[in-house]
Amino acid sequence: MPAPVPRQRAIPAAESGQAPAAPVNGGPVQDSSEYRTAGPRTADQAATTTDQATSTPGRAEATAHQNLTLLLIEDDPAGSPIVPDLLDQAGKPIRVRTARNLTEAERLLTDDVHCILLDLALPAPGRVGGGDDELAVLKYVLELAPRHAVLALTASGDAERGAEAVRVGAQDYLFRDELDGRLLSRAIRYAVERKRSDSAERRLAEGRLRAQENARLERGLLPTPLLDGSQLRFAARYRPGRSRALLGGDFYDVVRTPDGTVHAMIGDVCGHGPDEAALGVELRIAWRALTLAGLCGDELLGTLQQVLEHERADDEIFATLCTVDIAPDGRRAGLCLAGHPSPLLLRPGLPVRLLPYDNNGPALGLLPGARWPRTQVELGAEWGLMLYTDGLIEGRIGEGGERLGQDGMVEMVRRQLSEGLRGEELLRAAVNEVRDLNGGELTDDVAVLLLDRTG
Image (cartoon, rainbow, N blue to C red; front, side, top):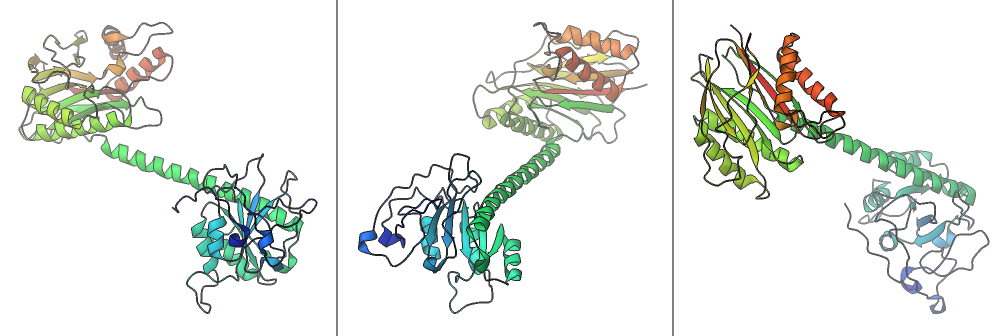
């Protein structure tokens, strides 16, 4: 990206290679920095002016209240075929600046220039005695002014060279001997609009690519459960609260260690932005690594708290967490809660109920040196265990301020089980009903997973 050109200073005519010309009726606006040279300069013709450009740097589009400005780059401006009656679409005069070479052009290429008319016969910088690349000067100008519209000026009959200039990046090409004011005015307007359209299309394409890359990255950061060899079935639903995002501050994971124990966890970083999502991924990966290394219960959560304290951007950031380790025989489990809602236990013929939460410890990041007791839970031979984040229970019910809450969730899941819903269907129905009760999309992240064991 070229360095931004500073606001144009006052340039004496003797320095800029330009001389004031008498205004022509209907002609372009002319001053000491914008005109066509009509003859040799004299000291009497020297004048200064302050450029009043207020547009954004390097822009190629004109607004309705501004005059179009053309920068002519030609080694003989006095012999230029440009006629003075250049008008934009609104009938306003098109201002003209002239430069004899690329050095002058670089100085005159200020913020308010909308279009460049370039003589392709000009030598490119560094070319002595010609060269093989006939469009080297055009390529130089395109690199110098990537956001400006460019018109290529070539000799009559040299259509092949003009067409090649368009392929290289110019918006159009014009024949020198066939040029008149009306044609050039129309060509300038067309080039400016085409450049604006091309720039908008490029920005849109770049935005789509960034969105696709972000989506691939976020999908890659979502967990892949490691349950090889386990008889437990797994299902999960995940819905980030951020608009057009795949990843939020909620996180979950499930792994099976070599001894046959299945470890599951679900957590929630306070907040909903990309920083919280990144921290959630870090905590999930750390949990998996520590679990596979043999840590469990209080020792694991204490180490995770250290990770959180080192990685969080603010001391106020905390995370809730629920971990469950299910014995190899599948009949009992250990439960640790760090400020997180207790899981639901689903068993055939028995009421849906919450697991004990009396030993719920503090959320990670709140109390240095905190402890998290591990509660032993009997599951039985056939069961389902549903872990969730508070996004599932904090949605509103109707237009009032009442929220679903854990009691409402228990009743909702009980009813859905009675309707024969299981696994993925159960989770999908639960998330959709919570959203419908809320009267629209939930603002908080929602994560819910289900582990079940059949007889």
